[in-house]
Length: 89
Image (cartoon, rainbow, N blue to C red; front, side):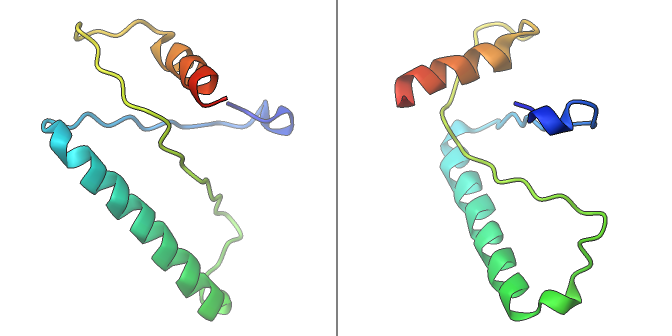
């Protein structure tokens, strides 16, 4: 999803595959905890961080998908996001 004012900017999406899906909740929890700690540190020491060239993104876990084939179709991520939006909306 790209905002209208960011159409010409480069965007990057990282997708990770877990070898052991029982670790996924632990990984998500670690990411959330790291985000909370970073926000707390930022509030306590805002002058320490140079945000001139940084961009921050909030990441929301909206679901999990298992595919049967190794090579996913190009539109898989878009289709999954659309389906998750229908389920949560």
